[in-house]
Length: 252
Image (cartoon, rainbow, N blue to C red):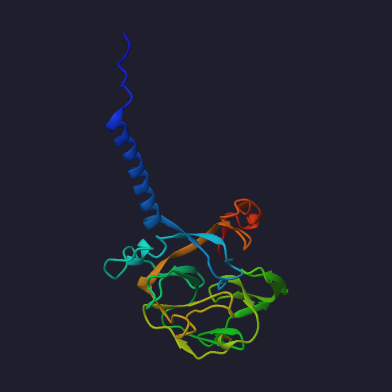
């Protein structure tokens, strides 16, 4: 005697089964996006050379705990953080600035609460001590508009040992600043492309100090990247404009 076999669903039953599959998949995607990790596209050159225009990065939501901004692009709920933990100096962070909380930014966290920071002749000072800065070879760099020009590079090493490369394109207002005193519960964010970054150094055109509640997550890696020649209206450029050397590339 053969065991009974369920017949395949038909009609409304089949439609409901398909609908449930789609709903479950969407719910899983939402849980991953809001609670675990979220992709972001880099639209500007303020974090070059660490992050390039056209990079797609993965940001982990659990890194600093959860706040009302963890649901980006949505933002609602009470202030404060659930399972909160403090960011480290040198982290590359996605956040929502106070006063512009409907837009995501990505910068490097340089100043912790209570720090005194200043830039003098392009050198960053933290609590009165210059940050170690080593000049590297000048490179020809192609920007988001396809313009290639020589750029000076420096290897900067923070007091906690975090190292990264910055761009220095010449003397600007951001190369000699006032002394910044980071208030409690806030952080100072600066772009690695020091002469092309609207950041915490500027009240006008930038965004000042960033509140702890406004942190979205920590940038972990670039999972795919496309250069300025790529266009969705020219599908072949998804191949010709693909940056293979940045595929699953860690963010330091």
